[in-house]
Length: 442
Image 1 (spheres, rainbow, N blue to C red):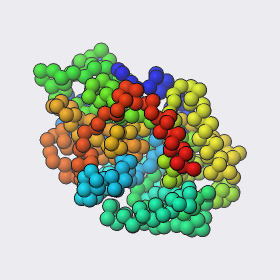
Image 2: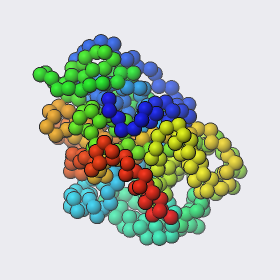
Image 3: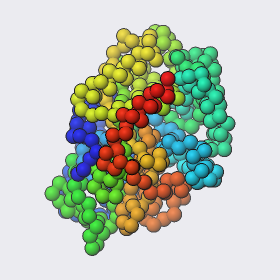
């Protein structure tokens, strides 16, 4: 396997201290123990892979999932748990330029459909995922950002068909969201959840429907054979008519070779505090359980969870290794203290990082690998994998069966990933890009 970062990034170090691991047990699934044949092989047991497995198994398709580590070990099991609009980073003007106004609206409606899909999965399986938050709130961290939020609000009806509320600084305090903010926009779409409990439910529903799931079964080679695809895992040969690669930011440059230089992992860090007392919440003026993020390019995202622990995440890590991890954890704590000074003495009980996945064109890709019959990928959700990753898996389940999806499948999701200009060395641009973002965020 050829991966972009050093071994530390793909080991246990970054995910040590992940709060979600303490909230729910996920049953162990056996490693692949023999050679076998399956209709569809899926690489990766995160949101995309498990959603695809669930929908395929329900359709009666023989499907086997191969996970190198454990269910949800990658970004799916260490994210902030925001089931919200998103998936790409292109603004409306850029979407209009590439796909036209109709294409832009179709993509936006797929974002909304992704939230609905997760809601349906949770409802059908009666999953307890600690759901809370009515939509999401975007907080202006500079006065000039309020104008941009107002412009976004004006487009919400056309793009998504959802309602919204604008908030002044005084309104935010009244709603229990006080802080160094200059206004906000609440979009009435989405909710927060415990991603590990959701993953546990996805895996259980998929296997109950007939999917086979193997942990500790890294796929080390993937080749086209005379009769489908050949995968090597745990010393065994697995043959599949079709393959779905659902490894996102933890992908390899050579599984398949086509992926080389077409995705860019980027670090995101999260901390979780001890449970906060009511008096501490009042002291900070943050008593809402609304999920929120700010308008920075290297944004902060945060929410008060049902047990009164506060989750706070940020983007921006560009280096890996034990020392780099320590620096990133210190930086996120410093940003937390600056935003919520009343909580400077509150202990951080859990801290971890994971890798989101970016694309050169700043859009997800869900579809067939060009010129590779029977090979499919779904990745590059730009930090919004709860909803869009689940949705990508459901779309791939339809496409693998040769069906026209009965859910929105816009051109913006179909456009194959382009290569980054620097290829193998593309991560070299990250310090410069992030430095520019930090300057722009002032």
